[in-house]
Length: 572
Ligand code: FES
Image (cartoon, rainbow, N blue to C red; front, side, top):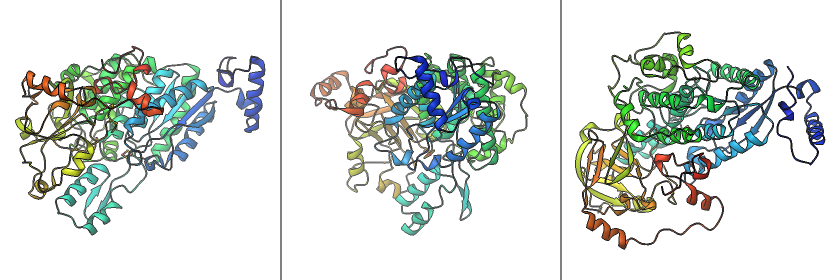
């Protein structure tokens, strides 16, 4: 299967001022890699892969790359893999969120700069899938997302454990003196025991599901466990399909549309997915010129039931979802709500995909539309004087008893302030207070970390308090749970009202009315604003400077302004 003169290795020549020489030289170096003339005439399939010793979630990538290559070769393509930045959640400071856009730029530019007719994107740990999809959407070469798959839960002393929801649960017990040092040390080696991404419906699993719902991954592949042989077959099939896309291009712009983004939002809500996915899906959609509006999210949330019974909102693990029918089972239940004409990487529409699928489903894991796990979606946006541009709460992971409340603010002005005072026995705090964290938003020095799940103050935790209302401009891990209001916008760093809250102020939250209000008069707020210290100065160099200057607020997906097609400004 040979290519036309503009395809394969002839694509995008290096500029030496003589095109024929450029191609001659390129082929000379391809020959140096051992490729025969027949191989050099094939369509080139790039394999963007983010393996790294700093990213244990990606440790299966060498064999995934090998399987993708097998598929490409069988279908008549030339597979060439290349590295991208890798973002391992617990290994990156201050937070992987700060570097998602950097990885997206890396992916976009390398897809565009290197001679590939299509690309298989391999990523899995939280930020890597959105980064790769953002980059691919901007480069707009035919692309398929392949994820490494979730880890398997394993049993420890009679209970199944599968990473971070369980990590947080064990840590909370330890903080409440319910576990000894020896017990927590022992648990540390039992919480994440196989290759793959976190085994619950955290951000990685949510983004894998969203990639499939968007149509950017092969059907049925989001939930295949990392160590299951089906995962390798999915990799091989992705390689094969990439060659088909190279020959008959279907581009991300054909797939990521207003309709498919709404499908993905429906799936996000139905799976009880991560709050982070709102930011990431907004950023991916933004690259394709599609806006995700938070009021529209609320409309979708009110009409989309939670169907999937997975941690952190339920009880099962991602491998159970695979055994139960996978994301396809969720899509089939949602079918009356979905836009079925959306194109996918297979060349079929979503409707054609669903028509062809096996209909078996385990109802313990994926409930029917008529008997859902919860009647409404897991995520809602709140608006009000504390969050004029919106905030997010994962109501499916929160305590409904705390949904309609007024409380006294106990304010922490930074992450450092939080960690130095939260466990102070002298901290003036009660169980019905609202904990508020400031200066942890998108452009803050902290880089919008997953710190919105503020720990329950030690003295309250020991007294048995399990949940409190917590409010911040930060994010929260998709594996966390609690009555946590996140992504408050504008953030404190950008002059948002959250930065004006003082300990003792009253705040009212109403999930029913989608409201979050700071009950302080306008005059007082104006005075506080006038007295506020000057903002942090712009970093003098490097990525810090670019990040601070160009990052948009949460409702715009925290993308860089200059990477979107619409030229939004950071402080808009
Ligand atoms: Fe990588 Fe959870 S730490 S997916």
